[in-house]
Length: 301
Image (cartoon, rainbow, N blue to C red; front, side, top):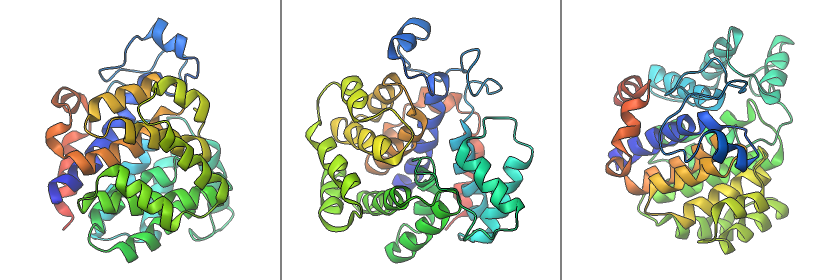
């Protein structure tokens, strides 16, 4: 299981890096025209939200996943206060894009809020999508994982949809790591434990889209950042390409919008399912932090 857990983290971060070149381009015709098929890691276009990033870097989402991994590796466990300090240190002099959830959270910290009460009101998927390092550490302890998944998400995102997404993703990915097929894990979790009727209905609708044209489906389900849009779109990709991580991540990026947050989720679940051998080596070679990630994972039992 450990190698599949490693693949879960690596594929999640790799998906974020693959999305960097076309991230937040909502016009898919622009992606076709100015970039073409995103089947390799690319630098951002001029004028991008991530203009200071280079090929093989992460978006601001991936940078937060890496900080979470570093924090867990340093302590051999998740400590909210420690993650809070590391996260604040990242953004105290950050040269990349700072989104609304991050800005609100930093303002709350500056006003004296503790990490239990620092979170923004955002429902963006970016918060719950950070979970891969946490699942790696607690891959044999679902009860603790669920509690800590809520803690790490709530530090920055407090909207009910974001917290429900964190619980859903922790349960699904845990089940996949323990041998469940992604589609079965998703269906079982939907049947048993998704809070929020609107999110549950959208997730069920995404299952009905399995196998259909991904660009069209995601345009319908939602290209946006909110969990109610981005999570169903990610589930469509997982169930449509369960045995082909490479195609799933390419189709994710080609669908436009918030492909980085979706990619973190798709890479996490399919990496857990397929293992390291299904991650394209050509992409791993271009990932600037690959060796650092590998070293951090080796420090965690």
